[in-house]
Image 1: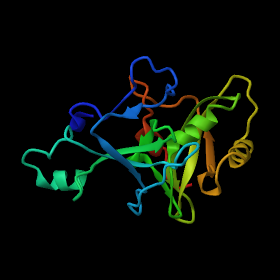
Image 2 (image 1 turned 90 degrees about the horizontal axis):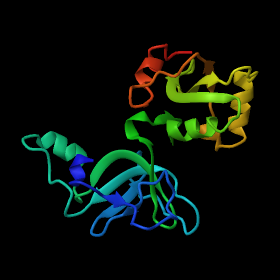
Image 3 (image 1 turned 45 degrees about the horizontal axis):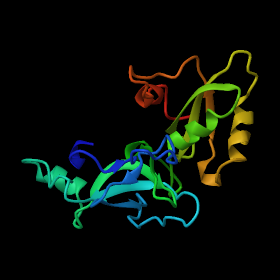
Length: 207
């Protein structure tokens, strides 16, 4: 991102063990943290496996000092300890590999938990009858924000909404379960392939 002037993570040349979906390792002289977006507490990096997702914060000599003439934006982006809040939701593996999984503004807030749409989308795309998927937060009849999946099925697929909700529930923590499903003909995307979630939200949030 521009504020990093110009980089915070990289994959060292010649390394073949770094996952392809990772942004790599934190570069020298840059310090990064993963924090809970709700509490601001640091998320522990496990000795084995991958951390829980949280917002990626970075600090170092290459990080910008602020936005010219916009103190309010600077205070909203850089905290008192000098960490820049990237707005990216990321995980860190025990080996130090950082993987960006979503954007903070896209998180679904379900009963005090944070649910990353991209995590559910990745899971759904692993189902053989699903051709494409998008997940957004919608408000249900009880006033709760819940994960809703929009799915484009493979030709001749017979999958039902109930079946996919059960399939997901068997593979995720209770707060990450898909609570609503809608089958659609296509997932709206930009020219670069980014899901146009605002177009999905315009279909109606209250179900």
